[in-house]
Image 1 (cartoon, helix red, strand yellow):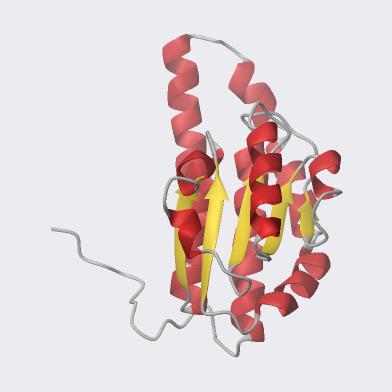
Image 2 (tube, rainbow, N blue to C red; image 1 turned 60 degrees about the horizontal axis):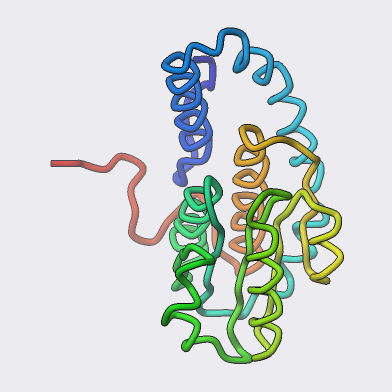
Length: 209
């Protein structure tokens, strides 16, 4: 797969490449010939469109410069993306960031939310939309700071701080949302005076036993 060499300390392309390989495996097992290749043709354009959102993402990062911890919430297939973004906030911004499924967050972790809490919601225009609306309402009721990554114009209208992604489908949406989250993490690190490619504790090559 032509993804070139991963040179940055945070493994960004690695995550997207792994998602693509897993998608190819699922497609092969389901024998849906031609489905994935057709979608892959549109993937570079989708990612390029997200990359062009960098100026807006940089402006949003200004609002999070001073925070020390954050929650990253999602549901369904986007939950893996929330964990990746959480990891990027930890390793590039040195934040105490934690990922939860939106459905699980209300069963205990919500007790930690205060008016100083920052919450990033990853919410696509899918079957979990109502859950997202309920979570937005609950978080607002306690004054939490919200940032929404979405491809739904209706959801984006509910949160002032948002990244509106290009419209896509359930297979393509994770590629768009993860790039947006990675860009945000990078922008936040730079604004906090941190070089995202030079972690204070992490080496590029790690040893797994």
